[in-house]
Image (cartoon, rainbow, N blue to C red):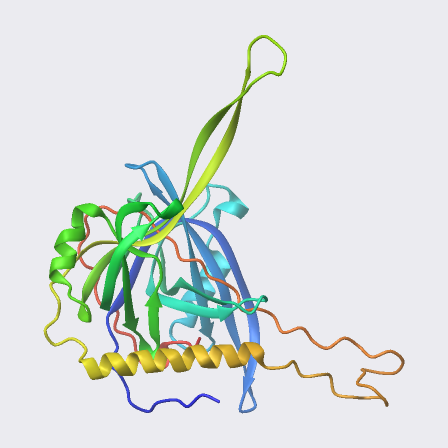
Length: 339
């Protein structure tokens, strides 16, 4: 059984901004009851298609949403659900150009094989339709604690030239998010590694990357008799999914202390233990309503309910134009949904 800490850590600034075409809208209106009061809530995902014309890349970013009826932000997602048009349903010509502002955070769960899965997810907060053509982008500005960095290894343990960076941020309610697949390119690696010593705290600017690269591979197929050989071409698709550091501030001299960093790691470990215990908890059999073995009527017992695996919300992201640091989102804690 895990034990929660009562000490509160400082919430670090965290802003994501995405501008692109609404590709898919997968939202549901559900109900929940608490203290005898039933309220609607809207949950699901929005997928935004971000076109990087300069590099000829198309990124698809999945944004997670969850809003409860009665909060100020609920009306905004109601409008999205009721009025916004997505490309998959209405076609590209009629799809809405949107701007979504939110946060970048970590997501941890155990899959059906009992393995811990950790990835990034984008939490949507504000939503806006854009009437005028606007360059697409997907950026993040996040205060982080940089733990360390190492050369990134690709296939066959060959260095990619990037640095892989281990870092975390702290959100509302002591939520410690370890961001995954954070890289910095060779053109900025030296400046970054000289500036950010282990356990430095500072604001970093990110490009969110989630795109496919399609190439054609030609293989010669020799004949086993005589004459010319055949050439067989195969299409190969490789996916790039990472969070790329493209700039940042100098480290904050008033960043997290060693004691606060240790506490953040303790909170993170307790949360992972809680996720594990939840995944390992046995399912509750149905309440008997007949006699003998648990059943819902009579005769053969019904199968116990299946505990679903928590869904993955893939992050996303493109190479970005130069941009001004997004404004800090000031949100009343009462307006934020609990995830």
